[in-house]
Length: 322
Length: 291
Image 1 (tube, rainbow over the protein chains, first blue to last red):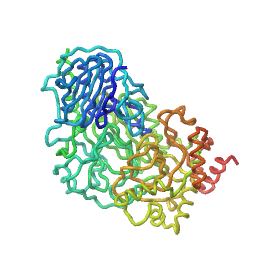
Image 2: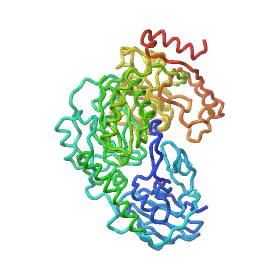
Image 3: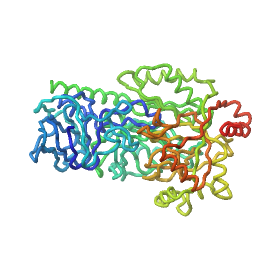
Image 4: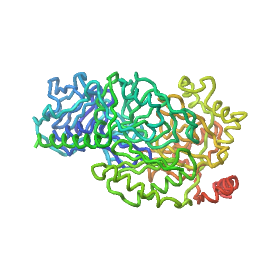
C-alpha cells in the first residue's frame, strides 16, 4: 500500500485538478480549492502538477507510511512533523516506511495540500480522482478519509530539499479582497444596495465549505421593484432556475452572499449579483470562518490581467525548481 | 422572449433566453446548446442547458471572452425556428406524498419558511387556491412533467408541468435555504418540481418522497449501470401517488435490485401539444400504460 490513516483530521479528501465535462448533469468540477497550492505541492515531489494529493481543512491528519516516499505540504500554514520532528512547509522531505506524518495546529490559511511522490492512487471516475463528497463520487470511496483507511500510491520518485521561495507563496491577505465582475442580475439591486455591497466589510460565516462560502455582517440589499417573472417565485431574490457559474455570488433573500466553489451546486433559483474572478478562487479556499473579506468591483480587463499574473507566478515556481 | 448575454466572471457566459419560464424558451435554450456543441468552438469546456437559459464555461486562455460572446450571438440566429419535435421517453415515478421524513425535516427548518404555522404542502395548496391538500396532490400528480434542466446536485431533474399557465402551480423557495433535505425528496420552487437525487442543502418546498433512486455513483442499480445519472433534459415524467405499503414494497425491490421503472419511448411535438394540451396529455398517459 503506501499510507495508513491513523486519524483523518476534520475533512481530508483526495483531490486533483478536477472533473470537467459533467456540470450539465449537476456533477461539479471538484478538485483542489487552492489549485495553485496543489500544483506547487506536486511540483515539489516530482509529480505531474495535476496528480492526486490530499486536501486537509483546518486540521491535519495523522498518516503512517508503509512505503518510502517524498512528501511536500503547501497551502495553509499547518506545520508538518515526521515522527514528531518538525519539517518545513513548501519544501519536500522524505518519509520512510514506518514513519508517521502529523501536523501542528493551523496557524494561517485553511487548507493544506499533502502531495506524495507517485500521487495518491485511487480509481479515476469520469476522468478524475477528485472527491465529490455530496455525490459520494470519486476519491477514496466517495468520501472524506476515516481512521484505518489504506491509500495506495502511484509509481514516482522525488528529491528531498526542493523548496518554493517565500516570495512566490500566496495567502489571502487581511482583510481578504475578492475581485468581482458584476453579472446578469446586478440590475436587480438598487443603486444604494450596489454601493453598500462593495463598501461593507463581510465576515466568513461558519457555513463555508467546498460547495460554497457564506459571508455575513454586511448590510442586506434592497431590490428594484418588479412583477415576478412567471416561474421564478415571489421573493425578489428568486429567478427562473438557471446555471450558476463557479465563483458566482448568490444572495438568498438579499441577506447573506454565498460564493460557490469547486463542489458548486450547478444551478438553482437564486439571483447571482456577480462572479469572483478565476484568479481569486484559490484565495477563498484559504479563508477561515470569521475572517474579514471585502468584495472589489473590477472589469474584464483586470480579470484577464490577474489571470495572466497567476500564470506567470506558476511559471516562476517551475523556474525556481528547475 | 428577449435573449440577454452576460459574463459570469472571466470563464463563463450566461445566456438568458427569457426571464419567464415557458416551453418555447426551454426548446430555444435546448436548440442553442445543441448548436454550440455542433459548432465545436475552441476552448469550450462545459455546455449547460437550463430551463429558460443556458451557460457556457470556456478557457479564456484559448478564446477571448469577447470572441466567445460573438460566437454565441451568431449561433442564436441559426437556433430560431429550430426543431420542436423530440424523440424522448416517458417515465412513471411513484411518490409517497406527505411522508414522515420530509415532514420531520420541514419541521426542523420551520423558521426559514414563509409560513411557519403550516406544512409545505398546506402552504402550497392554500396559495395556489386549492381547497384541500388532496386536491393539490391530484393536480401535482395529474398532468405529466417535462424535464427542463438537470443539475443543482448530481442528476437532480427540474420539471415543468405540461399545463397551460393558469393551471401551473407556483410557490416561492424557502426564505433561507435548508442545510438538509432527505434523499429522493419531491420538491417544488417557482413553477418547477424536482427530485433531490442526494441528501443535502435545498431551498424548495418539500411535498413527498419517491422510492426510486435516480443517481448511483457506484453504478450498481440495474437501470443505472450504463450511466450514473438517470435523467436528461427532454425526459417526460408522470408522478403516481402511492401509499405507505406500496412505498415500502418498492423500497424492498430497490434493495433487492429488482426494481424496474416504468419507461416508454414517446415522441413529443411542441406544436401538437399546444393545439390540445389535455388531449395530448391523455395520449401521453395512454402511451405510458401501453394502451
